[in-house]
Length: 296
Ligand code: NDP
Image (cartoon, helix red, strand yellow):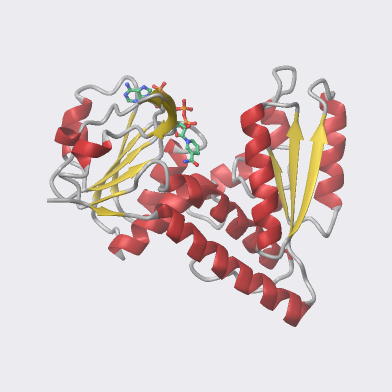
């Protein structure tokens, strides 16, 4: 069996088009323009690239983008003051603080100072609790993107065996909650899991979110399973810099029923879902119906 490739780039373009369409309607019918504020502290090169890309795509879908670039030695007090200002600003519907923060800043404190209704990354402890109890929340962007692709491919996920490899707060745990919410039977695997190959072989859905180069070989994959590769590993191969996933694509594509490539799979969906979350936050803030198909 050769897997169907789930094209995350094309899917993300469709999500952005849907967001742009609804943003245009909001403007025309309600005179509202959704706004996303992104806060970057310091000069981490990868973070700078992400923030630039987020700002560009925000503007492309017709939203307002507010970028706040702070020096690496910004005090916690100054950062919290800025977040408080953004929390109170009615033109700002979503706030994202780019992680990681410089070491002297308490990440938990900073994230939990964001108004949960504007927490478009879904990392605020209130949103984590709401998701865990099956209530309406802001959902972390990467797992939301994975869920959208899985729903699109399968329709219903009910009753499927899903394995999430990785238990981080930003990917693994919320991914497992979302799959549980869609009535999968969910296993969360991690570095202490015994006989990981056996656990993976039983899964109809495998989500790999580890950050270890090609650690899941094709012979771990059940024939016909759906494989979502979240991992991003930067390597040099054949004299070129490349991005490679946590799954050995060449062997997995021969066994899976469907698979996301790296790059061009989960990656593009993350920013698309950030825009979707900002639109959702804006609709909720204004008491308007939520955009269909863009939430969990
Ligand atoms: P973390 O480092 O926070 O978590 C990694 C998880 O993998 C941990 O739970 C760890 O287990 C588990 N793990 C480590 N080694 C093994 C092993 N040998 N077997 C099984 N599990 C193992 O990473 P993130 O969740 O933040 O990110 C995971 C990957 O996803 C990274 O490559 C990251 O770059 C990528 N990513 C991609 C995004 C995208 O937009 N496409 C967005 C976010 C992340 P334990 O808890 O026991 O240590």
